[in-house]
Image (cartoon, rainbow, N blue to C red):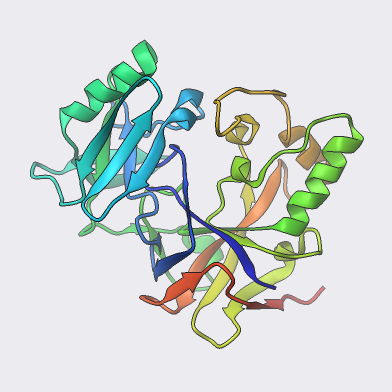
Length: 282
């Protein structure tokens, strides 16, 4: 098996960036979910509330985070940490410390997206703060992440996407691309749902090791076209994932596995890296 895609999402719920390599950090791939949009109550805002966020492109230069949208000029945000008081923001039930970016971002978002973006502001995770991953699935260990929903890495496979798309097409629905699921690491696999049995993924020469911790329950973001923000088929692919029942003991739609890094901090992960999986007994 090998890695076919690496994706980072510097700003939670905006467009991702496909990369050929990335530094492995405990909290995820370098720059992944470092920023987040919040409302006036300092609560996180995603495509769940505002699908149009999918239309904002993100780029990283040596000095800046750059936001782009067809209706406005690009906006550059310095990578150097902003000066200002820490702010307490919410991601699900977690309270996180963050640094507010310039109000220029708020004005830019309103110009790009209109009234629906009113009151949004951009915050950056304060790295002196640690946001712990839930303990229930860590086998006594510990892990932390930035503004991801809950885990530092999301692993998906080509085999599972192929199986899902075969089921969609059999029902007369259109297939969906991998970007609907916003994974960090995509693994080439001929076998559908193989990742649900993996305990660890190891780089073949031992450079890094990931532990697969918990199936990823999917939400309505998977129904949103990640280029246009349209919703072509409101119930899909969630309805078909439920029908496939890939997690018989769990209720809902599941695709991919949440993961943590257990070896290789500071190393490099690359597209093309060959992997060896250790599977749990059936």
